[in-house]
Length: 565
Image 1 (cartoon, one colour):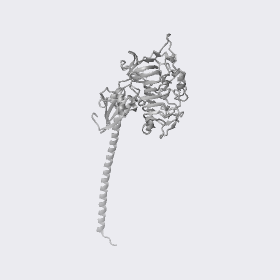
Image 2: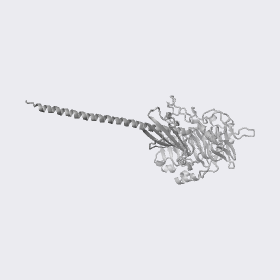
Image 3: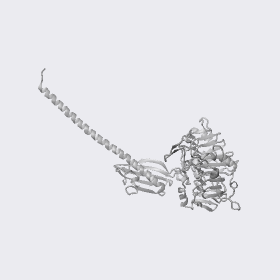
Image 4: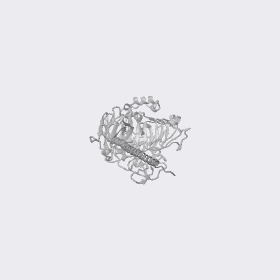
């Protein structure tokens, strides 16, 4: 073997050079990795700041919406708040984040919108990231329950070939049909549409009219449930009624009988409905004629029961703290012509009908208790509306076993569920009064006896000053109801007139026992529907009950605006 020393030294130098080159490469790679890691970390922090800025701006919008609910800007004006000038509390926007640099929010009431429609724009900065968002909201929006001529916060049921609905109808559970009623409009059901309590065969729907001809487009099952307004607290409506008693009140003929709110003579509390054995508050008797109609304007509050019949006129809503007793027909003195129901017209013609009738009578009744139509003391009324098996008032109203869905007769009845207070039971507070109500009690919840009548101002009396028996005041021989009728309790009606019974407007309730004689027709008043609410020129502000405090109509992100941040 021969060894060459020169070649060995060359190999050692080559290895050393390779090590130096590799070390250099590794250094470059390490430096690049550190730079990339640092950039990634900065980007990650930037993304966190970007997200935080959005959430802070969103929190500012929520704060402003809550603020605007109680103190909205005047029509056509705006309110501005910022952390910089101390009018926007930072504690309401963030939770002690030291990276938060500031926020502002502006609430605008546009001139071309309804006074309860507001545009809220908010901007927030976190470190060097700015996000700006905008929301359009409606405060105290009119409840969607008024978008139908017939709404049941329960099982909807139309059993009868002589029932006709010209408009939409909706139920917060199943909607059951039998004997082929005529439905000229939409059908909405939170659960199923049924035929005699069985899912219907879509090839042969159990109803006629427009819905029967086109069930694919007009019949909707599994739609979201609609929140019913809660009338337990009248304070907002009372404040509105008392804000201007020259515009809010009731007149009979030329005499004003209520200025905003009928004064409560008893000082007691009566949530109405089937709350049981509570001392009644002051009520009112109203009887209108063609020469002296009952005029209802603006928002009016009656703490107790109301007995009403005859001609009515005006535009407004009557809030009733007890029961509404409809003693005979209620008809508009200057109402629209419903001979061709507007909901059966082509859309353009229907909208024209609404516009042409914007100044005519439109009156709402918002009832904390029950709506009781006809002579509630008559045996015919009691047999059909109270004792009728299954659906009569003697069998509805119990809240102790409703289950989590709040609907009697469903699969969760009697099954305990977890309540917000941590208790487990099957009670569901359907009317929000904090009491476990039982089925309706005729004596305490319905009967118009002399004691109940004694709390009703203007109730008819005999020559000795004694209250007349209700059978001399009311009748079952009736069948025309003009107006918007709302209750989250029962609507029990005996309409015994041989002529067709007609509703012009809306009927909304939780439990319904409408018993008619021959024919019953519901004609929706198209002036009420929410589709007109986006046009101030086609909206009559009746002050109707609202189902939720705030409704978000639109939400978008704008280019970042760092002004005043």
